[in-house]
Figure (cartoon, helix red, strand yellow):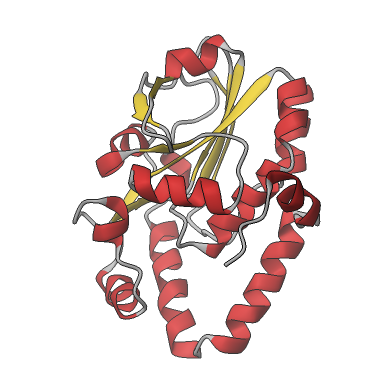
Length: 228
C-alpha cells in the first residue's frame, strides 16, 4: 500500500460538499449491501430517534464539562489547553471503521486553515483506542488531533452515548466491526455523531447532533457559524 504524502493527500482530497460524498456512499451501499442488512441499520437509527437522544444532548448556551483526553500520539490534552488557544470546533465520531465518519473527517480536514483563520481550532473525539486514532490520523493525513475517550466518559457528559442494539451488534460481529477491540472495552457503546463550536469560556455557541450517522453538518456551515 502506498502512503501518500501530506501534499499528495490534500491535492487528491474530495472537495465536493459532504452531502454529495454521502449520497455517493449511500448509493454504493444500496448497490452492494443486502436489503435485510440495510434494514437492520435503519431500524437501529429509528430506535435511537424514538429515544430522542439528539434532543437532549448538551445544547447551545451550556457550559461544556472540563475534560482531559489522550490525542492520537498518546499525549494528554485538556479542554482548558484547547480553549486557551481560542474557540474550539469539536466533532464526536464513532470511529475509523465508519465510512461516514471518515468522510466527515476528510471534509473537515480541508477546512483546517479557514477554521484557524476564524480564530478556532479543530479536534475530534471518538471512543476508539489511541492506537486506532493514530491509524486513522496517519492513514487520512489529518491535520488536527483525534482524541480517544475510553469508555465514552466525555461523550456521556455531552449526553451523546447509546448502547448498540442487539440486532445491530450481531450484524457488526458478523461483518468484523469488533467494537470491544477497536474501543478497548466491552460496553458496545457509541456516541451519536455531533459537532460543537465552543467559545473560549467553555460556552456552546453551535450544536448539531443526529441519531442518523449518515447525516452530518456541512463543513462550510461550520465555518459560516464561526464567522457570524
